[in-house]
Amino acid sequence: MAKNFRKLTWDNKKKLAFQIADGLNYLHNENILHSSNNAKITDFGISKNMNAQNSSIHIGIFGRNPYIDPKILIDLKFQHIKASDIYSFGVVMLEISNGVSPFESLMSKGDQRIKITSGARETSIEGTPHCYEMLYKNCWDMTPENRPKIKNVLEKFKDMGFGVDCKKVSLSENSSPEDPSSID
Image (cartoon, rainbow, N blue to C red):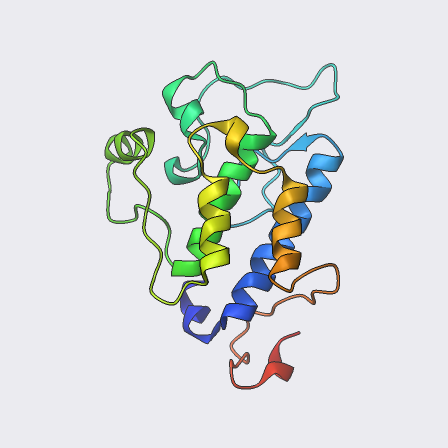
């Protein structure tokens, strides 16, 4: 995303975030936890079917700190839940907004963990639409019960003018913010 970030309009960014949310909605409707939302929704290596009797449970922290539910960073026994995926999605929304991974400047995972578990969050860049910013801030609330459900996230996107008719966003070299036809 970094090399194409400047080419993305806010409509492109919101469409991209909506499509990720729609994919997460599908997973949650199938009772699958993604467990690894770090700017992609394709890595199913540690996803878990919540209905499976023999589904393996991994103890420990997997993934990159900025995308991990702070409750998991604080308590290794905290079970990854749908609200944990929502937290990760909120961080992905911030990355889509800013074009960089959160806490990229903090090299130490320990420093990242301290910042995140104390409630510190990256700030949005100038020009971020207020409704978009409020949505991702709600998603990364420290208290899992306060985070929106994925269906509520999709409703907020519909309020922003995005819904089931969203087309895929191309991040190819050929996309141009001035030429909407270049978006697939």
